[in-house]
Length: 364
Image 1 (cartoon, rainbow, N blue to C red):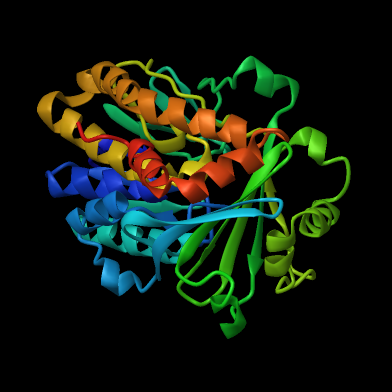
Image 2 (cartoon, helix red, strand yellow):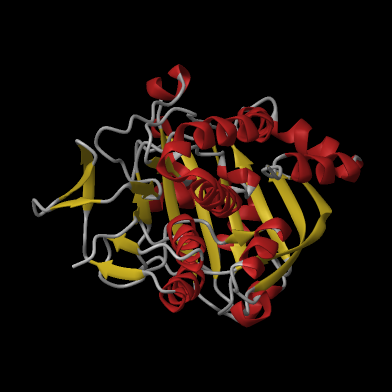
């Protein structure tokens, strides 16, 4: 069996995007995915105008995705609210549909896809799997999302270590009545020590994702959501459509705001394995796709040895959007800052549009 030129760990947007680019360039690529079937990932249902353009370059027709068109952003804090048109049209789409399309494109480009392979660590240049197998290739593209990977540290800031951030997700079932309160908007609901993002998806459902500090979870996730709905009337109006018998998904200790520009030759760190932007910026998918694009370009230029330079350049590109997203995040989850920020946004739409542009990953 001919060994692959590259192993790609993770078949989400970053991994599948990298596999498409590598295979189109003539590389023998093996894409490893821990899940046996494509599922709907916890968050990541918002695609900015830049992400849609990158998907088009990968051969994914945005019209064929059939997602919810998103034209505006709404902010809420208590009873305060604002609404602003986005700089360009975006989209809400489930990760199930997006990942399925990208994986199909990777296979069509010539990449191999092996499911049920749970890679856990890199040891002596080889990928170690949970069942004890060792897989080797000259280049490894690590795109394991928010999952931890042994030997790859992702340390959050000191203030987060004292009160780590947890991710929660509740899907509001599809129903025409959701169109009235949400429509063609992506919403951010700000509250003490956390926020919730809400966007409709292709089937009419709505994806409600929360980032909350662990200190808020002194009760069950359902009890927390019900309490937030009572304290925040606009969020409560949306939660009136919830099916409380549905599971509330959770992921622990998400290092929002973390980024790292250090790696070793042959190891390209992509997406959330390179940096985790606060998700209120809506740029998680953008970073996944942009990092894959940049890694493939670096690999084509100089092979495995270009990984350290690629990683440094990617970290530098992330510096400004991360700094701005962190500033908005810290202000929005504070008791004193959230409502004034939303009121300012209501009177200064150009400021909001400028911030949505500035928190995108620049080209490079």
